[in-house]
Amino acid sequence: MKYLSGNTRGKIFLLFFRTSSFFSKNVFLKLIGFPVRLFYNFFFQWIVGTDIYDTTSVGRCFNVYHGHSLVINKATKIGDNVIVRHNTTIGVGKKGGGSPVIGNNVEIGANVVIIGNIKIGNNVVIAAGSVVIKDVPPNSVVSGNPATFLKFLK
Image (cartoon, rainbow, N blue to C red):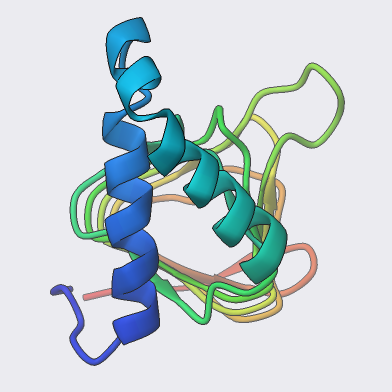
């Protein structure tokens, strides 16, 4: 999976996300980057509806398509080359519970819910509308509510 082009809105969001993330690293950077972080939190979380904390662990080449109504818990760990589409929720299943760990080269369709202390393997496709509440093995495609294994990828 390669970094996809032609996603201007997603690239603008990611520019501000990465910049705000940079300024969240330590107390000194938080102080000098306060205006950037304030803008990011206000504009993207409150106006656009893309709720990803700037402290969320996100790998390289993260790609957001139509980020409206996108919620990712700050404890979630996301690998490299991950694509996320609109109306997706990734987070804890219950108060005090764990958050998902998503591997590399994962494509997440629209209207997907991934909740709980689960692991999504590398090279996985999660079909639109799926509800993932259990671990997903590497190199697989899952779909449904609850998500079930469909096939292995070649």
